[in-house]
Image (cartoon, rainbow, N blue to C red):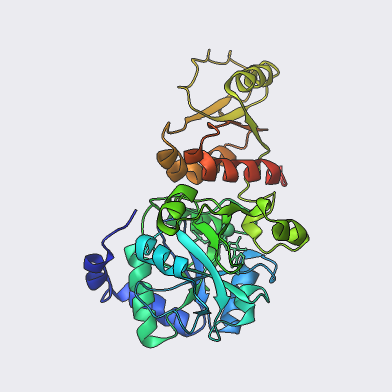
Length: 361
Ligand code: TXA
Ligand code: MG
């Protein structure tokens, strides 16, 4: 998971686009930036006016806290305090990388970032362009960038620059400076681990697994729904990514096992409906529609075969959901992946996508 950011960084630090992006942040404007997980919509984390622009652009409620991004090796003291030993071990092992740590808020972080809470989520992204941006921004500004995923609130996260353009349209190049860093390697959002409660609590599964966290800290993180406190706090959305409905396409999405999926697909096709599918098998052979029957220019069945490996599946997941959504069928049928640990993060995102889907069609 670790990347050697040093080499690429040296070249990128002198890149005019990185400088322009850092200057935009310094002036209080928004920058869409690539990370190894998903694209982020960034603003100076110390500038409340700039932070307001994030919430406005996303349509996100202002009590949903943002993750703060910092450069590798940057001192943490101004941004987080009472950092436990476990955090230092995890930082040494996994930063830069897809792990966000929830820590006690330091004085340098305004409450606008944390949704009024006394904790802050901090992460050090591994994408070389993100590292270069944070390094240059540390020279001309605060060096800390608050960035949620660069999508409208509740929608599917972007994993390439075109997805970001699709989300924000004409604002790109006007009020939002976009850095194009290609396709995100991980493809789903970072693991979020809460270290602020005297025990480890996993708030969002991601590419860094519970087992990897246990191997480094000696403790198995609790799942957030295993803590009584988390249950009591359920009414307050501390983690928007933990809302039941999130990461969702506009087309209704159903998660099904292979057999019922096939049955549902067949009956929909028989009744003349178009269907989009994300499954593990190869697409079935379809008879062409008879002339004059159905929508001649639109494919009746849009089928994507997902990667059999959880890492590859995660990398393509959001792009696949976007493709299926754009097919504008009446439903997206997704074959439920295995229930085993490597699929935890993918299963988490798919179940939330299913709950949140279909709001606009
Ligand atoms: O991979 C990622 O984490 C991406 C990239 C851009 O870094 N960012 C991302 O941000 O997924 P966002 O805002 O879409 O999701 C961040 C999650 C939210 O669910 C938010 O509620 C939670 O982190 N979060 C941030 N600060 C928190 C805090 N102090 N306590 C609890 N949850 C927090
Ligand atoms: Mg998000």
